[in-house]
Amino acid sequence: MGGCAKLDKSRVLVCQLGAREHYLVARYFARCGALAGLATDYWSPVAPPRGWLARFLPRVLLSAMARRHESLAPHKVISTPVLSVARYGLGKLDRQGVYDFAIAACFAHRVLAAGITHNVFFGYSYDSLEFLKAERKRGVFTVLCQTDPGPAHYKMLSEETAQWPEYAPRRGRWWTQAREARLKQEWSLANVIVANSAWTRDAIISEGADPQKVEILPLAYETVGGGRKTEDGGPKAEDRGQRAQVSSQSSVVCGPLQVLWLGTVALGKG
Image 1 (cartoon, one colour):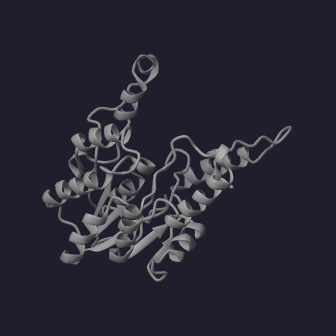
Image 2 (tube, helix red, strand yellow):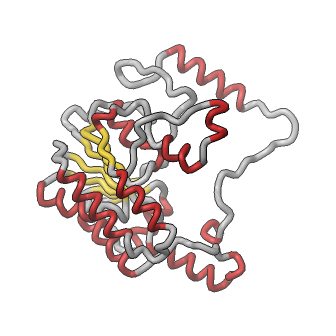
């Protein structure tokens, strides 16, 4: 994550179902002193254990305990554990998204009822329609993060699946006309739409998103160790030196070049 922009008067409410990017957006605004609150479905009250004890705990329990981050103050977080259970429990049975919209609506109602004072809303596609409707009435500035390339991607995937059925996933992501209509309503209501690549930007514009609203914001990352910051938000000199050393060491290749591909092998990848 880079240095903080001038957010002196901004109070940002970040709403997300799930732990996308391990709450990186909320953590960034918290670092800038601009986080009004983080609303999510589940926030663990305790950190997951380390060492030998972790070997004896079920993976699902460890995953749930990882739903937290030490840099976010607990009083800044609103969680709805019941919705988390419903979301993941019903998700095993519901492959058509019958309950998806209802859970998103309940989430928005719960968060808005909490009355968190804010003047900027940051939410994610498919889960933010009820928020965006309410925030527009209140005159709150809204940012919608588009989490995938949208309808264009799924139409392309459908064509590829018809041509290469043997490579189709057994349990693919469902796509319905109702889901598409919901997404396009979100596009129309948001003040800014964030896309993580030029491909996503072009894909959603081709399906009706206002090109004047779309901004490209590549997926964020943190440098090794996070590093300490100076008053202007930059890394301290000793940390810059340490990172330069790590970069220099990692650029030396001895023997054959080995490449690790971190991604899925699927029709959507071509």
